[in-house]
Image (cartoon, rainbow, N blue to C red; front, top):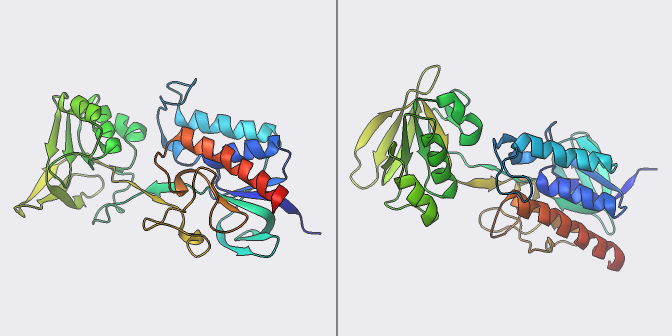
Length: 306
């Protein structure tokens, strides 16, 4: 007889792993489906996490490892597979993957998000050869070199400040004439003597043969184009939810985020959304972990009252 799980968790970032921990503690039969062979989601690419209570300055990979070890110690069951569909039946939810089908009474969508790309020539070709989406991961490779950061939000400004500590010169390229980042971050940025903001400008291409050599930038107000010589480009223009597979299954907003409140309940019975994939004010490790706990609480209520 095919095994039926109380809940199937799709994703093994902080939300998915926290959900696994809470599900195991609640003695629910749960399965975690992860796309990658290493658990942790985006956090594994974070050099330092300094805002998680009790663990200041922890390495992102180490934090992900601790989360996974906690889930393993409680007996959580993992499978590496790519989900292609969820079939909603009267009492069950059938998760279709490239490794077969898994049956659950409920499903928690915790597939996270990914970095938004510029979509310009040279971005894909030079990825890992000077093009990066994580300043804290790769900044050390550009010590005493010149780099560009693309974006104007908190992450872009934080990246520029971080890079200014190790790089000789940092260009911050932003399409508007003012930054969207928090004022305190802007103050720190403008206090950096080796940071230059290129206002009202967009990147048209990233250039280089074996490594990044320059970026081609156009001023959107006067249409003037110039090449800026850099050794690396850090792209920080937002994130995209990994919700494509689920958009015909549950309700999403105009940006692709799954519509769900703090209880993580979606518009489809027995399906819940947790972490960066859902609509929310703040996308951080701590809020993702909290979502995992809330989602399991909602699962328990559903199993009792459905």
